[in-house]
Image (cartoon, rainbow, N blue to C red; front, side):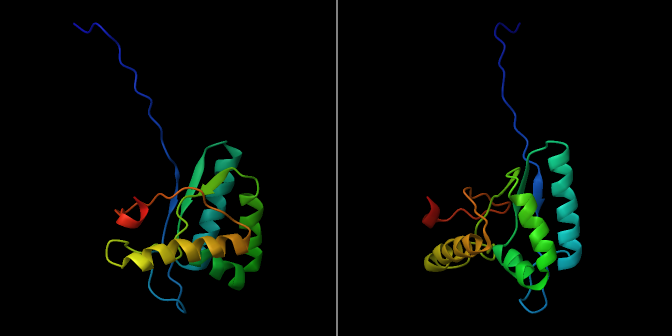
Length: 139
């Protein structure tokens, strides 16, 4: 017989995690830049419309590329971002597998990624990654 009720709070994080293939930068994963941003903007708008929390995890270099190569789409992204209804969860520049690069490279990923985000008028206050990227430099 159960004598005590246990209540556990459960939280769901909804968002986008992707890599984008950009020919002049090199390999990443998934999607073409144009397709990726169109889908992303629709999902962000839907999350805002339905008041659903939404978070983004993708390489900062994509946003840098987008600002240079598709300023209209980047402007739309920035407009939605400035509503402060979603967050960028990973400020690393290229989202490396941090266990296979050196300590200085790990720190430079954060340093350069945050610098570019700031330059673009964006920020990231949370580090979350979907792959195992815990390394000594962030402990």
